[in-house]
Length: 273
Image 1 (cartoon, rainbow, N blue to C red):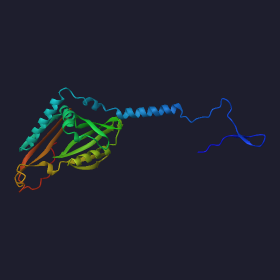
Image 2 (image 1 turned 135 degrees about the vertical axis):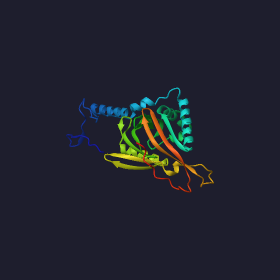
Image 3 (image 1 turned 180 degrees about the vertical axis):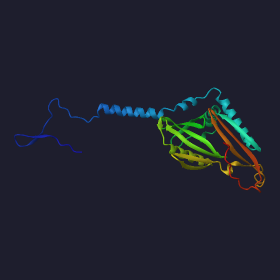
Image 4 (image 1 turned 30 degrees about the horizontal axis):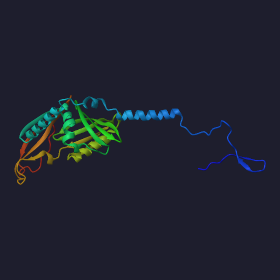
């Protein structure tokens, strides 16, 4: 950008630059202090909004001195459920949020770090859950560009039929910043689909639902050797799901299946109300 200097005509007809008068200064362009203060306040407020974790996460993020023992107990109970599923007849398990959070905080980062690591949002760490009647609150820390915030969601979970769940996001956010519920529900569906579950987004009235089904290849367990595929197998199903204060209860049934007579699973019957 070119600048034009002020000039004056001399008596001999020549032009000469005009010097500023004493005390005159060139005005520089400064932002008014009120605007600068407003921008700083906006940045500070935005940072506090994003980095402030929800109340439920603050309640469950800390682990007690018995975390290692609780995590070990959770692994033992999970192994007992797998053993019960392999036997014909009913099975059931009740898991406390304290044991689950102990496993998430102690065992998961040590023995399964690949399940955390980095994501499209940033580095993931310290996942936690809190259970309430018919509601699961899920939170996880996300670190990107040196800033750590808690991504969270309140999810309503119910059982529509055996091995078929319905998920609805009631609220979601990043810190205190709300996130669109449909986008969070869609991301949940993508993650579950990658884990081998069948998912389907549906719309009911003014809410979006995620229908999650455990596929037949996951509910059929072979009881014979790999080279004997025609041996009788075992089929299991979840028939009851209950979320209470600080506890999750699952119950179901396993039965023997002769694949020579029953090559395909029967339609899932509705769960008892």
